[in-house]
Image (cartoon, rainbow, N blue to C red; front, top):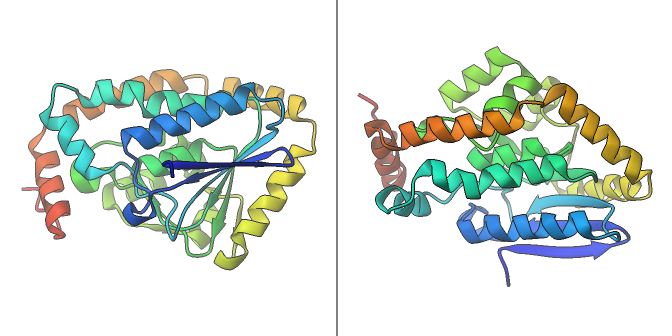
Length: 258
């Protein structure tokens, strides 16, 4: 089985992040699988809406910390990593001229949060929790989080939850406009599928043009923001705070950034 499961029914392409034993943490293969899936969805006339969710109890815990260490210790850099992984993926989600719905089935953090925020609509289970996550391991936000989060909930709230690394509950996310709807966890698959099916039977061409207009009006600097995030992450990734944060994460203890 692959890292991304794909199922097309009645115009709805359901993509399921499939590393449940790792809380659907991304590795490069999963990101590339998802890029491929979105590339195919953009070309496929049978795909009229994309529904993105996670297997098991989590949507995505962000990037796999073990793989982060291999990037940090190897010839690659965080900037180069982002330029071939999350930056193209976020742009794909925003540029595909078909609706993309995230069914946030549980906790989501880090790059997983960026992927969810890039989607057009977010339907959350009442068990979902939204954690920025990056500063907990001494990094800065990437995957579009530096742009999407303040845009959706305001700069003050985005700053508070980036600095504190505390989770935002599903109920608070709804009140602040971070998600469109919250439903009981056992009802999420059906509720998200119903919304996706409704979109798939709608004027997808007009939806695509609307999305293009929204991107121009609200996100004209998305590509520049992603590039700048990669630059900031390159700096953060070489710092002692990142080493300290990763060591604490792996040891399952709170980090001491002093």
